[in-house]
Length: 124
Image 1: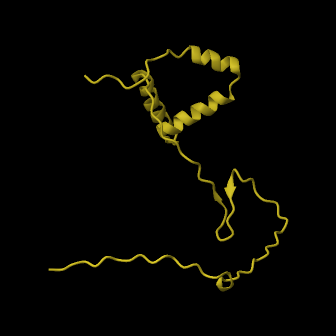
Image 2: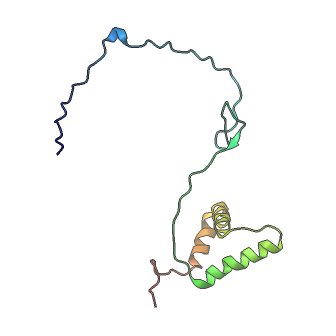
């Protein structure tokens, strides 16, 4: 038969102010150097310049089957041109092309795309 004795909690003891360590602050003098564009490279003193890693976002959307097949056809065309690409790269290239268009052209392009019901397709 073993019995446990109650454990008595001891209050924390604060150290006197005189006993704390005094840390000297180091003064750093910055040299005037032309820095590269921060959006393109990340400068670290220990390592060489490396490109900045952009934060990625995952999303999902619904697309008609015939338009989805166009992605496959474009991938095949690019493979023949010795420039293979992923679906996400094709979509990103399309966004860049749309962003470069004037407002009237984007509006016309959007009117040529039929609206579809959003959400997941029903299971059969």
